[in-house]
Amino acid sequence: MTDHEGKIVGRMASFVDITGRKKAQSALRQSEERYRRITDAITDYIYTVRIQDRRPVETIHGPACIAVTGYSAEEFKANPYLWIHVVHETDRHAVEQHANRLLSGAKVQPIEHRIVRKDGAARWVRNTSVPHYDSEGRLIYYDGLVQDITERKLAELALQDSERKYSSLVENSLTGIYIDQDGKIAFANSRFASIYEYAREELMGLESWKLVHPILRTEPGLMK
Figure 1 (cartoon, rainbow, N blue to C red):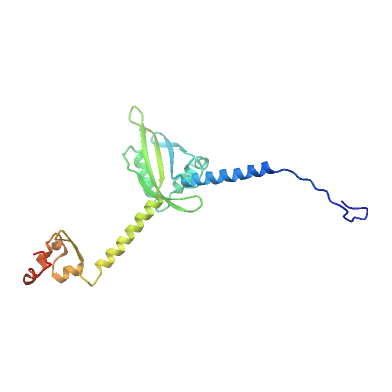
Figure 2: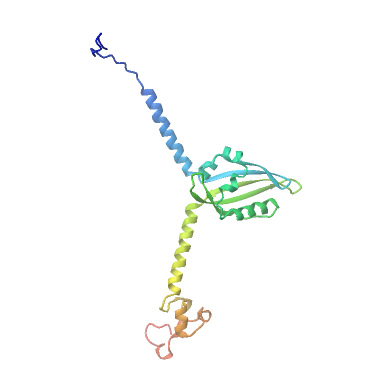
């Protein structure tokens, strides 16, 4: 409050109890965080494709598609080509061929391929289709299950890469390397084969003791 000269001579204050509002905001944040954790944990979703004259006429994506792809069911409905645009361009042709075989009535196995989420992240998915036919054997619709298998796929690829590196190191080694299983050669690298002047195919299954000079075969520690 001010006097006639504009000087502050006092103050008035009002207090509003906003406890209820703050509690509601806190509860909302907790709910959103809980929903986010649940959504992040979802790795599968279901879709249905309706068929007429061997052509897809409608696709319905389950609401969980947003957790896997980043796109909502409404976005998939608004753009009938979004499902193929989501597929990584390297895998797109294989996915199209898979869909065409399904539409032609052929039995198809689940297909694993990459997708690019709405946020730009690449993910691996496994797409399993279950066809449904009418009484005359015509395909009328099929259900699909999309599973996010990124963690498993990345582990498999890392293992394959490790095996390739290990195989290259062993194969290119200047030291002869072989693996003995139950007294028989199960593996030999090229250097080992060249030392004994065998073809690698000849070494497979050969009893190891036969590579030892006859004079040394009675030495302690040898099999024969």
